[in-house]
Length: 68
Image 1 (spheres, helix red, strand yellow):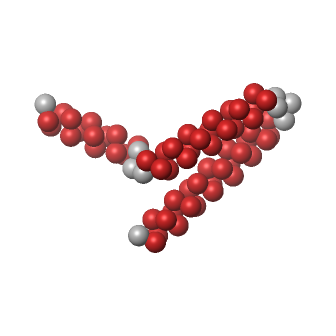
Image 2: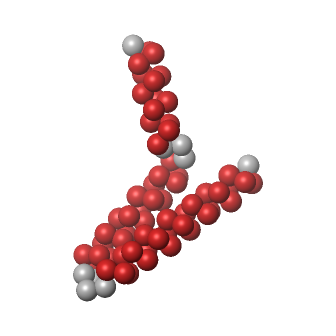
């Protein structure tokens, strides 16, 4: 049973290596979804939030990892 739990933990670690990164991406996606619902006439606004938000989160995560 511990072998199976270790395998599942390792599998989950492949997708969620950094919890802060995952939470930030989820927040960006949620924000883009809210903007898409509030302003349906301007779909580029939600797309821009997704693009620049995810790039910003990724760059800040890389910068923090470089400092370690």
